[in-house]
Image 1 (cartoon, protein in one colour):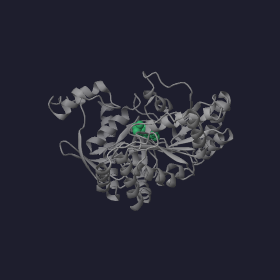
Image 2: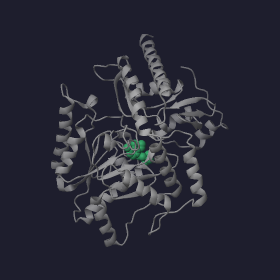
Image 3: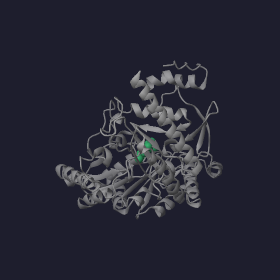
Image 4: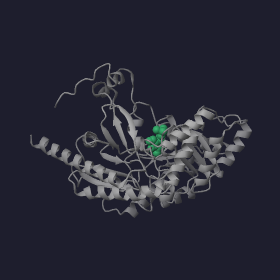
Length: 464
Ligand SMILES: Cc1ncc(COP(=O)(O)O)c(C=O)c1O
């Protein structure tokens, strides 16, 4: 192997190594390899500090729906900055952008929702959902109804409660998580988790039966809510079988358990409809929104809750004297103005329909790679897809250490000018909704080339 030269300590890379502890990064390895410093963005592309162009095939972190250079969002932010750069929604205060955004989100929701509450990240929104659910149980005089169910490989964030809802080991290990009262049920990943000979329908039925068995074992009167992403994203882009959500919802309704749809990735067009709940016919009590809400130009998240949740919350706040929850920057006017503009761009330019069309092209192009020796499964919906890499197709296994093959392929992709993301051995693709057909084809060509080079490299390794 060739030695990677150490960055100059005075360069951006050197100073990043010296001063910056990174999120989701092996901190020791970072001391050796340093960062990729991204300097600017344009459309679906970003450029590093050496001027090299990359297709941003993850839209940042599944989030930059309108691309990296949308002037309308910049203008909306500037206008609002000049008018009122900050205000809050504590103690009966409000401002125009947060009122407009609350009304807009409630009116867009695919099921009747009562009110919006604003937070700054997906994690905070999920924490807030859990707190409101507990608050509601107390309001209803059901203090024992506090447990919540989340899924293996589900992702809901990293704060103490939301990391506990997250079903990935690295979010728990050495953090002394999860907290008590979070129950775990199986992931909807048919390819990975089906029993030999099981059909998709049988698999979905089994998952619903397992959920019901868990509820009965714990006591239905102790279970407050079920948290799920319509399509689990960070756990590997897992598209549930067609009848999965109907069967799960039937069980939840039977035991009067609230459903929280974490739409942080799926919301605002990603699945080819405005919300993942529409794509999968999900009727949630709470929807959690972030990321494409503002195209991540500024941090903002929200939860929408129906009257079944909001009614008791209102009563409990009156009994106590206040709803003792809220964030200094929740519903920030500049972020809210940017969110309203991002939604307007998505609606006016027909980006949801566009995402469905270019998404079909992307998925068909990736599907054509299923014959490749390294490709185990290609899955996706709308404009979100994953390529599961294997070295043994029959056994569905990859290289020795889980994630090793994924990381290798992802590095090869980056060298080919594509910023992607490997979740274990799955390569995810979630480009901005504005991506054009020619850009999709360019991406597909680079993915195929990168996989060929990895296959070649592995064969060479095996024979050397
Ligand atoms: C479905 C889902 N929920 C919640 C989160 C957490 O959001 P944040 O990173 O803004 O806290 C994420 C982040 O990727 C997510 O994908």
